[in-house]
Image 1 (cartoon, rainbow, N blue to C red):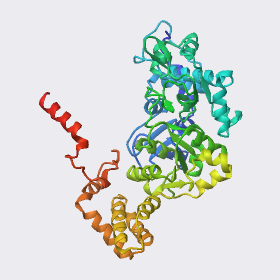
Image 2: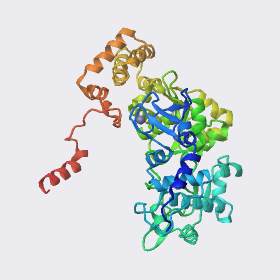
Image 3: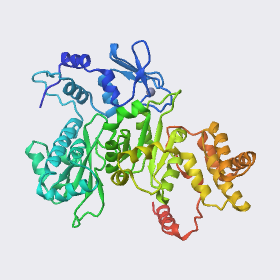
Image 4: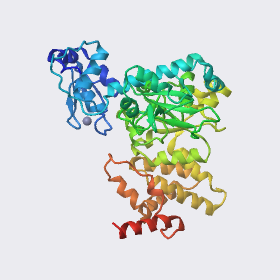
Amino acid sequence: MAGRIREESIAEVREKARIDEVVSSYVTLRNAGGGSQKGLCPFHDEKSPSFHVTPARQFWHCFGCGEGGDVINFLMKIDGLTFVESVERLADKYGVQLRREEGDVREDRPKGPSRQRLIEAHREAQEFYAGHLATPDALVARQFLSDRGFDQAAAEQFGIGFSPREGEALFKHLRAKAFSQEELVVGGLVAVGRSAYDRFRGRLMWPIRDATGDTIGFGARRIFDDDRIEAKYLNTSETPIYKKSQVLYGIDLARREIARSSQAVIVEGYTDVMACHLSGVGTAVATCGTAFGDEHSRVLRRFLNDHEEFRGEVIFTFDGDAAGQKAALRAFGGDQNFVSQTYVAVEPSGMDPCDLRIKSGDAAVRELVARRVPLYRFVLSNVVAKYDLDRADSRIDALREAARLVSSIRDKSKVDAFSRELAGMIGVDVDEARAEVRRAANRPASRQDQRQTTRNPEEPVSAAPRNPVPDLRDPRFKLERETLKLVLQHR
Ligand SMILES: [Zn+2]
């Protein structure tokens, strides 16, 4: 076991590690004059940048939440590293040879495998899987890729691989490289039943990387009919380095372009991210096995060059079908800081970017994104489209339902513009639409919306305002009701 790192090595790391470069992997920085740079603070939620980095002094400070420090503690804080892990990671990146106290073998690390070890195991695993994509067993995997328009160069660019079907090929490989069983299990690469076995077997493998390009997990697609696991996609489960509520597939490739263009495109899956990037939409990312949530939006906002004068754009690609409309509605009810910057790109034929690229080529994917419409307009027109606007009574119903949505928008400065647009859509007087929106805001059912306008922006927003409290006598709730009764009676 190595001894404590010497002070002079730590000083050398501080000196050689470029703080602006390190921070830029997490936050988009722009010039703030006086030799300092600023961006949106990753440690508190804010709309205008108060997070400053001063490279000359190797120092960062946030005027919003008061946090600050040097490059080592920035990494500790943002990635949850220990001091030693943070120093080791920077030393590795900036080529500093760490010298350690002799004889001092104090263990200054908490229990469990270090982040560095988990990252190394994933790097080895990624290479292992990628190497197996060329084997005869992986024919189906290669076929899958070529059917979707991805050639070998694309597979290499995205680091795609194949996990062998034998139950413990990766386990044996990594054990031979001196990784412990504990490291592999904690990292989610190996599971333990009666004995240790590979978590992913006989699947097409996408490495999921963090913004700095380190592989932190995998997405694995079913390709064999006799795969005993039915799920089409398996993803790494939660590990110390993989948090699915924050992970965005493609962020390593997209972050620079997202910062440059102040635009991010959210697609549904791995192949859609690939199709977008290969078509020239370099801002595409996807969530992995979970819906896009508030934590994802917070991560994304740090990369968007989002400031007062120009708000970044977030574009969701949804299917035009009912599921897509539901997803849009959910996004609408989500982080409302985003609503006025959120757009929807819908392909009328319902094709996702991957299918669209196969059928119509790269330009069609770029056009799909360019044809984006504001989210609120998409949601409102879906609501309005359900009604027959030739009938006066239907127009009133349409207005009533849409007005409820408009009144739920927390950014009150937007409400009037949306009301006007709504009036145009339905074909009623602007004043009538405004009045209906006001009425909707005052209706008892919207109490929840009013509470939301004053809630703490840190809290996740529920999409509840449009769902009235269900009737608890409904037979659907019987099981829950009876269970609760039991719980209350037998503590
Ligand atoms: Zn802050």
